[in-house]
Image (cartoon, rainbow, N blue to C red; front, side, top):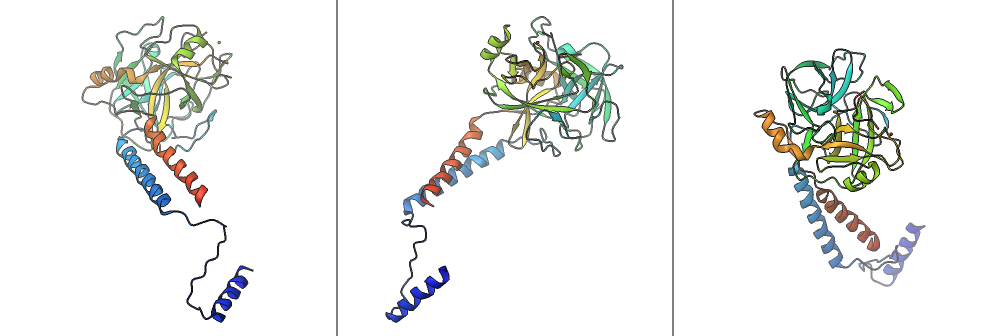
Length: 339
């Protein structure tokens, strides 16, 4: 149909003796886009590109990379190797807490998890099977925060030095830690992993590592919900309607947020009222408050700290969205989380 109309129009032009005249067919019934609109679009494009470069240079090499992690939503069994920094703490009678590998010889966990002799398993997925990618180490040194308060759970954080360094593989990698001043606003999408109980009334632990996706809850609201003091050394996460949470056995494990291509640990599983109860978010130790302490303890083998700022995520995204739309216009009580 369109081809026929074009041919007829050309024949008419030739008949009128104007074979070289240009042919204008207004298919969309729109006027041509003004030059200023294109200039404005290119300006937004280059600004967005600038922020993309800032984001790329902001990435710290050597931590927080999980090549096998493809999850988008939570509440399910994790894929083997998708959380390569997850550690399992074993007392000799089974796993009782989690932790995170933060360098080739240091593991971060909760102070309330330190109960006696501990061995650390890395690269583990199933608690009953010693996997091909798994390694284990004894603990050479335990350094818990000197101001840890077992009654309030304030400063519930501890570092474990492995007897020997580990080699990094696809299944064993360190996580990035949130740097001092990092801001995790209410609603920030976060993840918790572990082999803990499936509920406060269900004391059966799981075999395979599980993961759950929950949002950050502001400290003031968290304090109102729980009815006890939430200090600046704590961070909360959970759903208002409940249903998803960390639980007994998950203690010491990480609360994490993805920052572009890297994962950043914002918290350490600490305590909560029950598990996954409505309006009772879990409480975690806020990692960013301990950068100096962690750096001093780890000495010559420190972890990598990364600043998390929401602004770096929103600016380029908002610019691209605006640019695109503009063109379219014109073209329960449990003192802690141990079993």
